[in-house]
Image (tube, rainbow, N blue to C red; front, side, top):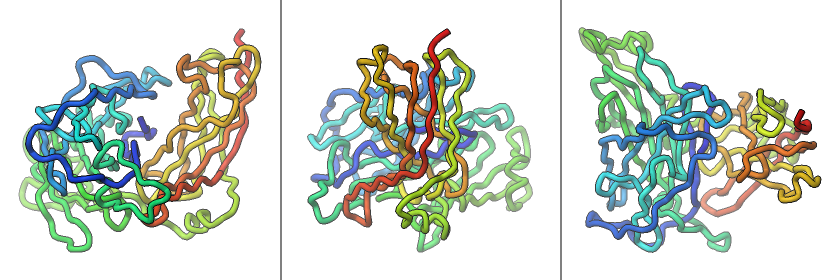
Length: 386
């Protein structure tokens, strides 16, 4: 799981990086493979809340359509916080899944997707809405771009998923792809849920704009949207969403930070209430570089204690997958959740830890080149239990 702190979730996740080997699956049923079950490390799914949204969106290259599912969850590090999570995948027989290089359809168990976006729930007139989601997902699960290859066809290897949940009172929505600027209808499900799929990875120059029309009359009236929109008839307002879901344009300061040999961004360690062994740790970092595509993000390395009580821990550097969000903009402060080294036990051992936050980039142009740049570092101590 990749999580953004706030009322709008906007996470881009890479489960695999690679070019597609072979053609996409046809419309005929695809053989079923082993289920995908990667439990959410940050949240616990609430029983009975998982549902597949009744939307089917064609893949640009054909084959099985794409769909989405949502569920409610509780933040493992703050159980009082309820989250709304969104998963994406290919659809077969009403079930989400992923296609593999072996030609199988691997169904995703509820809450078990490697690509999930979770965010705080925004109350909109008593409704639950997830906001805007921009995600990148591999077209074929498990295909790899080798560092030895000259290039990777990123338009074939990845899909950009655009999902919007606006709640009731939405009349219609349309999408405009740069550079042609023509508006095309977006498919809509109940409660103002929209879904679009585009080839390749999102960037500031390639992410489409969204235009939404909402009603301003009757029981489903949306005065919150009309305040931001332009009247378009007696009982309608039109809202343009050019700034989201899409990544920000990169600033000069961010470009300078990319070229810098060393960075020392402001960082603060937050130790939230809890016993010594299950303290919730987060690093609040003032980001020096804007995330402009789904192949970029922030990660961390953690040095842990090697005492008797932690003999089973790995004491070398341990890093999590990159957390990537199009809301990661240079100059803003972002909170990275820091997980214990011994993930199976899920508790912290007493002692001193050193944390290094990293900016990661997986592609340079179309060539696979993994770049890791330290941007901030800090230490913290887990005290002995009382």
